[in-house]
Length: 116
Image 1 (cartoon, rainbow, N blue to C red):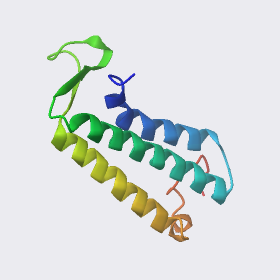
Image 2 (tube, helix red, strand yellow):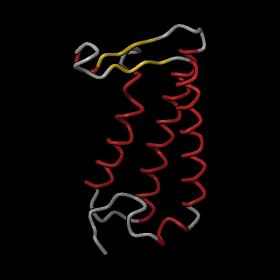
Image 3 (spheres, rainbow, N blue to C red):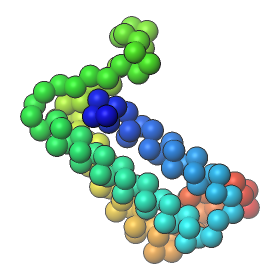
Image 4 (cartoon, rainbow, N blue to C red):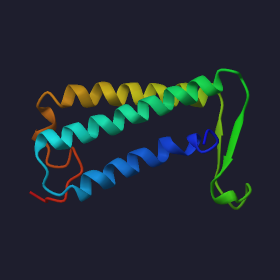
């Protein structure tokens, strides 16, 4: 499982957007809870990746098991793990600040199927 952990910072936001989109016209509270839950999960995954990269060992992951000129290869080192963690911490801070009421001023802050 730990070798697939590298792909989760890409897949979690996509999965969160899909869940929010499929939730239809959910209440504001439900949208906020889902957004915070997926962002918290992203933060946990990024911190786990940071802990994994702390040893200084480079970790590679080939998406679809295709090698480098034909496929996408993800690499985890200390800098990339730090940047992922910083991004997740900032995303959580921005989301919590926006959930104080500013998020409903824009119609598409949380992914939704309504086009109001």
